Length: 256
Image (cartoon, rainbow, N blue to C red):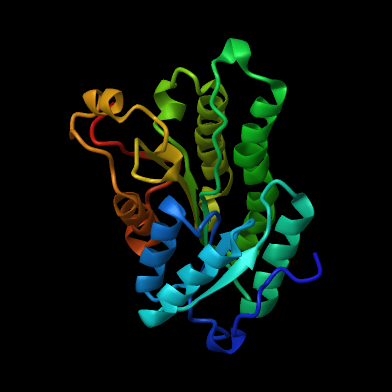
């Protein structure tokens, strides 16, 4: 890529005291709510997107309108070189990266007996290989700076399994395992690694699902809101969660 960053003003963010966060898939849904919540706390937020430049710019403009600080950053988590370049560019511009939220995700639902290998690989590449591509260079930076927060967005599907989502459930379960293992590896370096496991949240990811059947299995009797997931993520990013490490926190209306 010739240029990852898309015409943002870096002069507003070169103060080392400013915390810096990178949220993947932040132009819509849960990622958008997370980016907005972090920005409200005075954190400079990099709004990652893969293809929807307009939505990402709208998100950045909204943060700016509320006196927050943000920049959009385009890269695909399934491409190693783009992830490496993104982290390198953030460090060159800011000197540090304090928070990583691995939120980018996708679904490709089919009954397992009918599932093509391409559907399996697409979901695994985004969730698990994408986690590797981006988190590895971020961990190296956080080890150098001796601190950081990593929050991985898993799913209730990764804990209980969903019929028709064997690929998605397996990928999200893998994220939980990776979270717990990485937390053990780097917890002594003032870096926490946690996962948030949303249930059914009102986003594009739940479009096309049978809502009546879903609501029967949710004690709260409703779908969750992206802002409710964001609130938990923001807590895990804060100093108040310094002793919370390797945990999986459900935001699911009591499904489990």
